[in-house]
Length: 563
Image 1: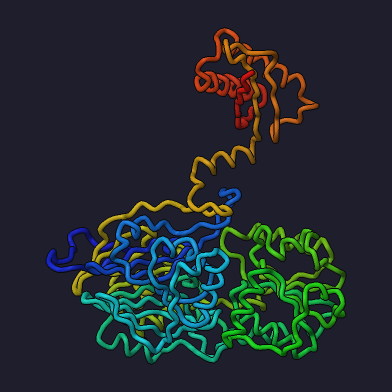
Image 2 (image 1 turned 90 degrees about the horizontal axis):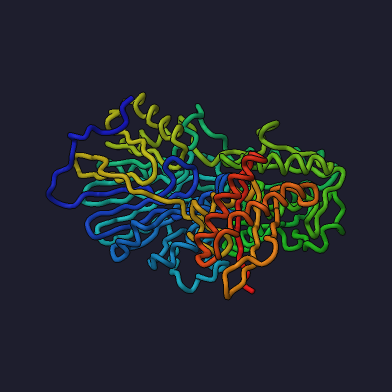
């Protein structure tokens, strides 16, 4: 199947073209960020975070590389956000202050964004504008019209982006749920009205393109929560994404029905609950919530705990509970833990580790590998994706927000539905698409780097640091301490060697003594005048010796002390 347009098909050279550039989200489920550029105007859709790969030791999150935008900062008019999930808003606290443009979001999404900006202490540096889906915005060459979509969080929207080149429909994450928890299904009438005069290009969610049929309605979940609470003999712990407001409301509704009070566990969960209630997106009786210090004072059969950490994140509330390290919660016989989410690709091992630990502590655990009744995807399956294609009838298609195989599968569905395969683009992030009213092409690939966030550091961790961390985690470190006479450069006494994560010092005395001899032999023929040169020699000789003796390559750190 041919997905890329032939090189001979080009746009006319006169006049501006619509450029669309995924800076994240294509070839990945997360880190969604899309650039729309026409002439001297740019708008950005979404600004999400990605989860670190297992090889990214110590990294908290990955965010999009916005070098392209920073080089064109004067052209950027705004950032538009489709919904409040982390993979669509998580990078805003780090990137929005650099871009210094307003952020447009629906009411709940804006509330969740403000929480994140406040946590990072950049709320006063960023302007967040709340809009209603009925509003239409004209910014430079763009006319932006929002339309409601069903997802696993209220207030989700897609955008119709009209330019002189034509209309682009950006769906965001969606499904066609006719009985959503918030009572607001995907606005089919508005999508139809937007596209009645034609749709140049559709950028469509593709995450569940491999799943036939339709995705179940969210309402099924509350029924399952109720079934479990009906028979539970102790506490029920429910974990889901902290931004999954609809799921949290369902857990609360089921708890109220069975006379259970509710504890909210985890900072992200607490913050989002406060915002959602203040804005009217979640409701519960005044006396329902249990303060953390009183968790053990309420009978287990009358307690539900809604816990953050469904992806097994290090340091999350659920992970600490599973390790027996939480201040207020310890697992007891009779506890039931429900995972109301599926593991994000790459997080399966972390989730399974938490499940193992909870099971070892005596909890009964329900999770997707053994029962799939507690999670419904917020993404449309094949029939729904085909419905969106039918509503929009686009000339061109760019699958987004999925792994490469999922993007490709949406292309296959579109071709089977009659779309010209030459008009289907299945491309990774960094691809530059250019469109005119009558043609389209791929012009280049922008080189994008992983921008990693580690604590307070943003972008200061690169491949060299990750490689060092990998070596330290796998091979350990050997520190060589050499004392030299400042006036002559001669070595004083024996070099000292310290091993951490390489060999156990007390049981490797012979190896350590031989290593000291290697260092002494390397330095004794010459005075240490050029320490950098001597350092390189120590590393080179000691690496060879240790590999010959152990077939391991620890990191070697020579240190000089002048006396």
